[in-house]
Image (cartoon, rainbow, N blue to C red):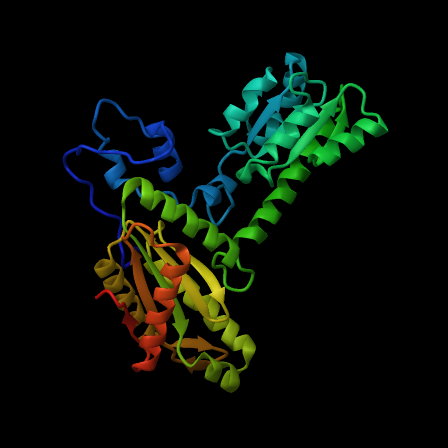
Length: 364
């Protein structure tokens, strides 16, 4: 079902560009932004970037969580100087459709992990310069690899070595040469456990919106992208009107159902590049990257009107609700996240105070 806010149309001609960023490699910037490799040549940005919707979230995309569609193949990075061990591991889980990468030199691992996002790491503790344990400690300092499962392997897994590798940050330690069924069980169980942890970190268990922590992380990322690309970022705080009355009249379980339906409604009518997170209670944050304030307000107004005209049937009872929202835009140098949210929150309270069921912005 097409959303109310559709992705932007492709521009016909490439345009000159200037990158203002601490990141020197333009292709790295574009890969971070779009969630895939974008080829750049000469002094023109490719037309592809004007029509390609930005990834729903690089972190979310990397998780490859199934949501009605088949998940992407998991990627496994093996760091071991022994080519034979790599072949054994690859053979043991060959029926799972995984993608593999093998590095024999530990000195190349950290640079690789700045560009690659494997779902699981298998690291030999027998490495030197750095050692396997030292390498694991360094990997755990990379923010987006703090939850990546790491299986350590060693020719002699003594009690001391096991304690050392677990203390460094490994999830599992296996003696090599290993049995096929053992390494396969370890890989599958660690991937499954990691997926559940990441799902818990990403999604609010009640509504399915992003968690407060994650939406704030994404807000920080989007403000950084704004600094790089000078693209607009509209931010709204949305609140259900008179929600306490719904709970008082129909009970909290019905109220919970209304919250779930509101988030599903928003997801249906917003673009994939827009992000919805739970701010607290019945308040939600909506991030609209690449969207000017006037357009964002028009989109939310159409969604607001459609929601108000759509009664929710819960337990054979028709329930009508409305929502209000305050919206602002990150378009000024030096405007920090605290001020951005303060302005949106202040606009929300003005919308509430002036009758509810409306979208308000101080800038318009």
